[in-house]
Length: 216
Image 1: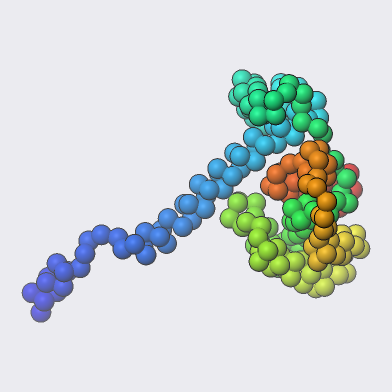
Image 2: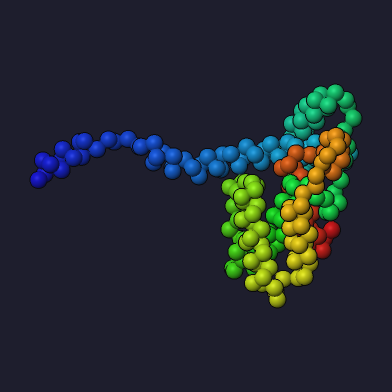
């Protein structure tokens, strides 16, 4: 019997299978990817801040970067644009209806619901995953978040301000009927023409949170 056990042990490959390696690395890869995406988003936000006329010193302080690193990014964007003029400032009105902006607003609303009803909010897990960069905004995940938010608004109706439902209804209508662009592409600096999807999503998220808190 001992000899059979030794033979079986000898036959067992002492190395990871591909499936084991894939499972082990899945979380690590998510964290690494999220870090890369956050660094890219921060770099893009420098362009937005420069468009508001903020000094490189202020941008460096806000982004926790060195001023030479910020200067390098600003120079890079100016070279790409072929002009020393800054980017046109992005419009920050909450009522904009391109998809990334609406997704950001939905994310902000979900975050406020999770803060208000943390123990019981259905959207809390999604919000936490999005904050860690482990949830990406795709048509499928946006539909998932909409369902969770709607369930929370129904189950916590007495606890949540009416403004939460009003915000959700506006966001939902916009996502159901996105604007149809039939003419030429929006000009640089227009609401739908400025900023990447990730930048617009991040800005709308922040503005929606602040609006619901009465800070904007």
